[in-house]
Image (cartoon, rainbow, N blue to C red; front, side):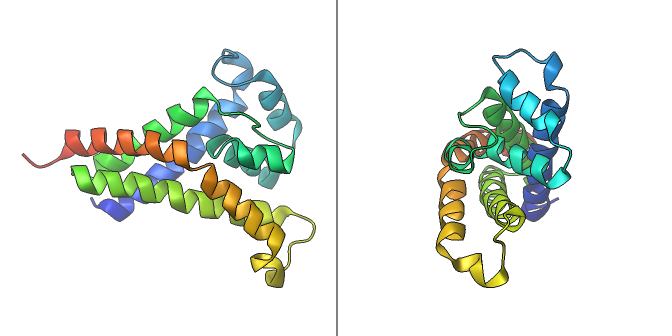
Length: 167
């Protein structure tokens, strides 16, 4: 199917999986996701803020600490979602190297999309401020938070690519 499709599907799987776990987080043990984070997610009615909270879960903890909402610590959910997303990306990429790159690029593109979303929901969002100091700090924190999710995703991508490779 290809590396590009695997990358896109892996990114969607990560966000959808984290969104669903946070939505039904009251029924999930506190070791997987902190109850304070679930209650914060459920108390927000705005979809953009909910997706931003999902972004802080997927790219912990620098981003949530700086923004003062969302995940302020790394959760088990981060590694489960990115490992699963990497596995799906690798399965669709059909090869070790393709699975590795599909899963890694899914994490990096997701970090840039999270940066743009968080920047655009801020009250000072302006097209000229996109490359301003505050925006660049948010981008740095999102990319800095993508190190461990990248590792989890690469492991899943290698496994998925190894399972689906041509023999």
